[in-house]
Image 1: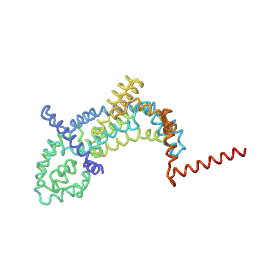
Image 2: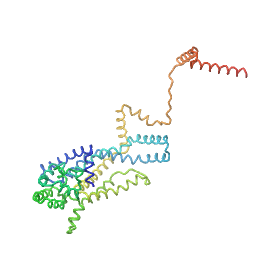
Image 3: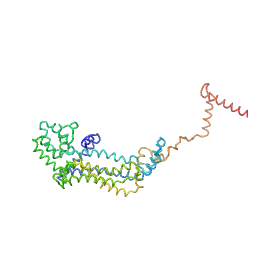
Image 4: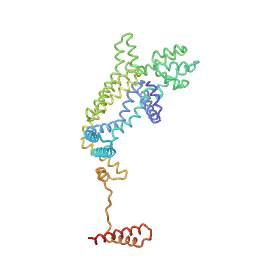
Length: 427
């Protein structure tokens, strides 16, 4: 299932381009490790790759953590406003609620979307990481080259496409012929990269003529995939099953170490993050508390069911986040809340001034309640100008044409005047 999902979003427009760029980085790491240090190991490349990616994302992580720290102070005020308008659903009340919330955001110099934006930027990068880790040969030329001798031999066998489609549709590959073109060498490389020992045996049974090249390829890939005794091309669950027959303590330890490390590091990473102050009865607070424990368990599950290479990435990324979080927490402790608010307000002011409105004017607008705004115009007309306009209007009405609105208005005025005179005489 995961392979299908990864193949699906790996081809999305933006993610596809990011994956291509990350693939170039992975290829560069492999080439440097091979040419400079003489190390040909995918596990080592995954670790270096993960460290570089999460180091590059530190500015976004710091920004997100600043928002979390600010949220801990803002949330009581925000929740107070939300409770105030909890049972008021009319448009006027909702507008007033938004106005008061905006005043709080202005007070702390932040945007309502400030906490979401860094995550939205990180998400395409994180999504693009998985296709690269899952399909190393597609992006790393050296790994692809290791599979090409056996691929060339396979394509020379009569009916190879049908044989490979049958093997590829079953576990552990799970690549349906309806989604992949098995006549292409790149597809066959992707399929072979998912092979485990039992799958290689099945291939040899179907194609006995390629046994020699298969032995050479599995030996080479065993060297590339071996990381501290763990075959990162196999799932830990498979390694665990194989270790039970015959019973092997070392095999069991190696099989569970990556999933357990992934779950534990994930839990520590979440606990290290600053938690925004929330009411215990708040639904969002309950959801966040649940996620604190479910996400590490989910990491353990993924670590057992996915190839160890993906589990290694998952575990290393969690460890890197833990280290970064400790460093970020120390950095944020050196900055007082007042300094952070002042810094946020200055940045917000600069952004506003770039749009053509000064910070002073915007601050005045933000603190003005729309409820008290009245559309009034202050008259700057002098008494002489006012008298001239009155005389001009009177002259126009006096000379008005018969039947015009002005003449009818004069008639009404004279009628009112006569009635007023009659009333006085009666008195």
